[in-house]
Length: 237
Image 1 (cartoon, rainbow, N blue to C red):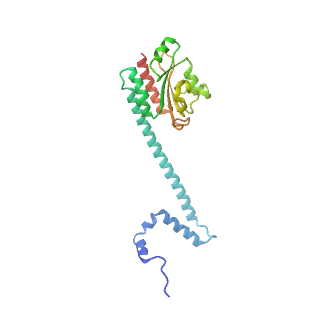
Image 2 (tube, rainbow, N blue to C red; image 1 turned 90 degrees about the vertical axis):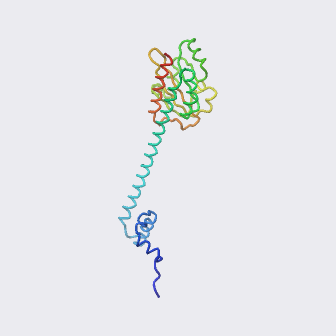
Image 3 (cartoon, helix red, strand yellow; image 1 turned 120 degrees about the horizontal axis):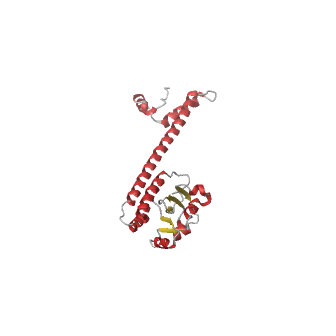
C-alpha cells in the first residue's frame, strides 16, 4: 500500500516554486517552529527557537515605539498648526471690541475650548468699571487675583509658572460665571502687560476633563501666551 503524501501535490509544488511566501508569513513560520519543537520532545531545548521568540518580542516592542513616535510627531505638528492659526486670528482685528469678539469665538473654536476669559487686575474703581463694560469676556479682578487663582492648592510655585494646566476648575464661579459648572479642565496663561501695569491672565476652560492636564507639554501655549500679551500691550497703550 503506497504512502499518503503529507500535503497536496499542488500545494507542495507551489511551496517549492516560491518558498518566500512561507518565509514572509509570520503566522505560518510560528506554526512551523511550534511543530518542530513538539517533534523534538520536551527534553530538547531549542536555543534557536528561544532566540527567535526573543527577537520577535523585541521587534514588536520596536514597532510599537515607532508607531508611538510617529503618532506623537503628528500630534505635535497638528498642535503647532493650531496655535499658528490662532495667532494669525489674533492679529486680524482693527479695534479692541473686534479683538475680544474674535477671541471668544474664532480663537476659542480653533483652540477647541468652550470658554475664554481675559482677566485684568485693577486697583482703581473707575478703570475697573470701564473694563467691565466690555462684556463677560473680560473679568476685572482685584490685585493679586491672578497669583491666587493660578496658584490654587499648589501655592506660589504654581502661580509663578507662565502656563498652568489642571483638571477641574476650583473656584471657577467667580471667573466663568454660569459656565463654570460645565467646565472640567482649564489652561491659565499668565500675562505680563508691561511696566507699571498689574498682571493679567488668559483662562481657557474646556468641558473635556482630558483637554488640559498637569503632565502635558506647555511650550505651544506659552508661545501663544507670549504673542497674546504683546498684542494686549498694544491695545492697552
